[in-house]
Image (tube, rainbow, N blue to C red; front, side, top):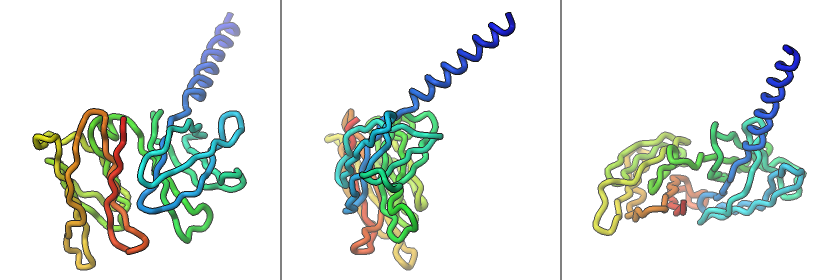
Length: 220
């Protein structure tokens, strides 16, 4: 009897682990920053085939089903012969936005990835997600929200409560110059409506060596 019970429990645990593994696939959408031209790359599918992925700089890609292994996503060149990039997946994530970033002069892969969990806690409904890819600190105001971010940091913000009659709120970005003085680098208005969110990237334009702000509309 004990043997039968132990066998039954083992079977349940095995099935549970299998179910968790099967459900670990996540829906991924990709984009890049600025004028970076990302070559097509691939992701190994569950059946061993290569899933070809296309990335744009001014909009989100379509959704691809990606399969993490040990909490990481692995991407290869389009022919599957070399590593393109790897990325860690945040825990309890089933939808993600992946920002593909160049790493010029790097030994090994020339690209890296930032994985953003696409959920209400990280990227609020009708709100914004700000990522600092600049090599220095930034500070900004989004409606009544005010914050500063160190290089590499990110933060999600809910829809501003202070909006005008057209449902718009101001966005103001500031960067530091070489004398550590704050200078406004971007000032605009964003319209907040149900089903629309904003990705906001602060980065350095490699061509002109100056800080820039890129705003991407994300339809939920």
